[in-house]
Length: 316
Image 1 (tube, rainbow, N blue to C red):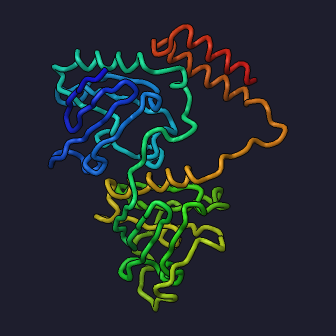
Image 2: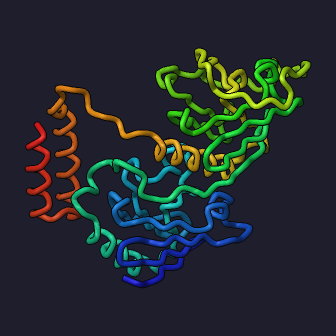
């Protein structure tokens, strides 16, 4: 398309295969947008496009990403407020007709795969190196390793005894981020082999934080050998906890997204178990239902719907 649509806090530049989102820098712009600066979103990363009324005489153009396409939203896990959603472009209501035109143009570029979760990240993650200050330590990421350096004023006895930590991303299976806007926010790494362990409900700030003599001061320790994950993040050397003014969204969320993308990229592709050649019929039925919704909404043509439905049925 090659056009530009300027909204409040952001400008969308439409290219032949993607949308370049440039975020404004200003006192009224959400800090997360200023931190991201700009993002290129391939059309292949989108599942749908909507245009809805906004607040106080505005309309909202929303390019909805496919599940699994964006490491930032995967790390956020639904915790972002609408005002910090980088896929929403807020425009004055008098530009609704123009916004509808671009919405239609984008919808026409969505293919049949828009109905499916992405099998890999299609939107680039924020770039390392990165760091931010949490309540009980400083977190750093150089692209290959995550490091936690504890603060004597906030770290628990358990963390001081464990010492500063370094985690190669090749030894991790994921990242858990709980927004600092919640009471018990934290960023928690998941070492390989501990994916099934469920952490407790909160970090427990203010508990067990008395300073003690630091063991192994200056020694970098790894996540091995693995022990059962502590129930609370404030006791887990693989986690940093947030507090008022510590680990803000615009710093900790891009950090979590960058680590998550690196973990996924450096993991070997999982192989299918021997003897498994058929898909779950319930999963196929759900995907066909979703495809039908896109078809009825006019986002998928008759030919695309028929071809994709036949492909899904062939997997049964």
